[in-house]
Each structure stands twice: as structure tokens, then as C-alpha cells.
Image 1 (spheres, helix red, strand yellow):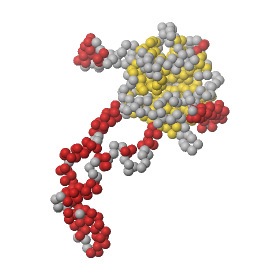
Image 2 (spheres, one colour):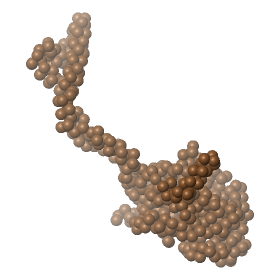
Image 3 (cartoon, rainbow, N blue to C red):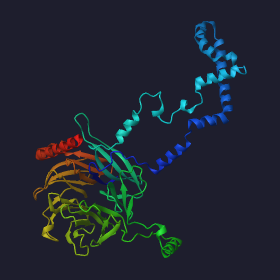
Image 4 (cartoon, helix red, strand yellow):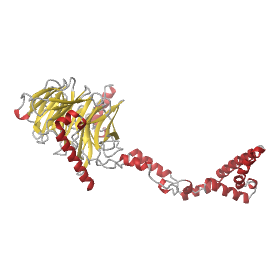
Length: 518
């Protein structure tokens, strides 16, 4: 299943991820050490391979004699065929094989001609590039390398996936349909995870104060720690950083080690010590702050919301105003310090991260919270979906407990995803475990359904519009695959929003052509 997904901005990924995994590097080292150089091979042959060569030559002589005997035994009807074989057999000089000096030279010459001179440089090459008998180099290998390259026109999607108790992040590439080609989507590479992934957030801020922009993913799992992975390292086996989580055993004090040993002796479940200010349970939600790039927010099953400083890899604030698991968090796109959170306590809370101890604004929902989003064209307005399928819209300016601007019965089952199309104000997509993705016009306080699509991903757990190409909607679900819906292919959508979407498509095409010229 796909439990969460996110778009990667175009140009953020390296065109060629050339970093080797530790396994590949180790194999390369072993391979290099096992390679025999031509001069070394000559020495080895001269020292210890004489007897082997003699045995090989003896076997070849026996085989040639057997062939000659078979030819001589043929009936007269095959004399023409015997004549054809006479010249090749004469070259073997079978009658001279028993001679001592000249025969030995003849055998060596014949063996060298047939099987090589014994110089490894003439019998094999370390690469095709060194072999003069190969006129065309590259070919299939170059094609595979080109397929592995991330092009500027490619769209990249992150997906958190679990199948048969194996968890990983998948990096998907989506290629738009061209004038003569259909669209294409495939997994570029994946990264193994140690625990079931529950939440995902892309970010460009490297941890530990590294000033360079990167291509990273924050991953929340069933464990209390938040893993930060470098997506450009295709062979990554461990995260570049861990926010919170369990303490390594060498960091435990003597008293803590004694307590754990006593628990183990009593046959109780061993509970490892956690880092200071770590979450104490699974991390269900993540949101990266695009304005303050070193800031990440997380929501956990331990009922708390935490704000993390990536530069120090430390928790800078803990918000504990929810009474149950925190399912969703979202930073405001206009006011970067304003954080929205929703929980299983059927509440949505709004707080300012600069004053974490102040009382938050609170709104009640009809059921447990599932997803949250801010309206990009009206940044004081937010939407909250719940387990009963309802979507409620609120204006934060009206204060805590204010009535919703409208309620939308979007699905019969939990509405797991909410996402706005940035090219069209008021165009909302909802996705649910009923396997449906729906498009709504919410530009007024009377929402209207525009289109419904089953993307064949099963129960949908995550969906999002692409920021750079807002007519593309990605979704992932229970079937463990990702699908992309080009909403410009839907007649109802184009009938209502054709001009706006066409302008967005033309603008992106113009930007791509300009970038290609540069």
C-alpha cells in the first residue's frame, strides 16, 4: 500500500545519482583486487601453468586424432567431404606431434593460434572500451544510463510504500504525454525503511547546519523518530539524520542500562530509552515550512505536536493541546509561523509557533480528523476533512469555535486527502478510501461536484496536485501503486476551467523552452 505521497519540485533532484551504495563499493573493491594485470598473468603462467597447458594440449591432440580416425573410416561415397577436410587437418601436422623439439614448437604455435598466446590482454579486456574488436561501444549500457538520468522535464513523486512487511520510499518519475508518445510513470529507485511509513514531507534543507540545498525526505513511521533521507543517494542504507527516536545503547547511563537489564530479566517487553524531547509514539503527520527552511512540524500518536530545528536536529517547541492522536499538521502559506493541527479528539487547533505556551484557537469536527489544507488563494481559510467523509471550511479570522463557511459531504468513507489546484482558485480535489478522487468547485459557499475518477489505486490514502504543473494530480493507495490524472483530459473540467488551465499549460511550456535554450 501507498500510505503517503509528495511531489518533488522540478530541478531539485540531481540529473545523475552517481553515489555508490556500500555494497556496490565493497564489490567494486573486491573486483579490483581480483583483477589480474597482463604482466602479472604472464608471471603466473610461466611459474605454475606449464603442466596445465600440457594437459590441455594433450586433450586437444587426442580429440584431433579421434576426428581424423573418424574421417578415414568413412565410406568412399564421402571422399569429396574428406578432401574438404584434408587441408585443415594438414595444418594440424598430426604426424609431427610425437617429435621432441620441432613438434613441441609446432604444438605451441598451433595452440597459440587457436586459443591465444597466453597474454590476458589478447584473450580478455577489463572493459569493452579497451577491446579493439568491438567497433561500437556503449549501446545498451548507454541507453540504461540515459533512462536512469532525471531530466529537467521529468516530474518526480515520492511515495511511502509497504508490501509484505517490507517498507521503503519509492521515487517515481512521471513523463508527460508528447505529440507522438503516451505518458509514462515508473519507479526510478527506492530506499529501504526500518519501520512502516505513515507520513512524508519533501524538503530542501540539509540537517546539521549544512547551507547547501538538497533533495531530502522527512519520514514518519511507527517508531518515535523522524528519519531524514537523502533522495539523491540511490544506495542509501541509513538516514542522514534522526530527529528524536531511541537512544543508542552506548549513550545510556549505567543506571539506565541496569533498569533495562532488570526488565529483561523479568521477561517484560524491553522499552528502549528515547532522546530528549523525542516523540514517544508513532509519527502520523509532517509539514515542512517553506519560508523558514530549517523548520519541520510533526504530529504524533503521543498527542503532541512538535516543531523541529533541522539546523540543530533538536526540538524547539512542543505543543500538547490535543487530547488524542494528532493526524494532520499544516503550516500557513502566508503567515509562516501559524500552524494548523487536527487530531482524533475531533478537534482542529491553530497556534503560533513563536508562542507555544499560549492557548490555541480551536474548532470542533463531526468526527476524527483525517486531513487539513489551507486555501492558497485565501490564506485565512482552511479546510478539514474527517472520518465520516465530511469536509468543513472555516475562516480563521472569525475566531475559535466559529461556524463553518460550508460543509461538504464529499465521500461516504473517510476523506483522506485534500488538495487545491493553484492554477484555478476554488478547484479542490478530495480522495477517499471509497477509491474515488473527486474535483469540486468551492469558489462560492455552495460547493459543486465537477468530476469523479477511479484511478485504479484502490482505497486512496494520499493525493496532491503538482505545484509546477497544477493540472496533474497524483494519488496512491491500497494497491501499492501511484497514478497521475491529467485533469485537462476531462471534458467537464475543460468546459468549466479550460481557459485557465490552458494558460497554465502554455506558461509552463514557455518556461521549459526558455530553460532548454539557456
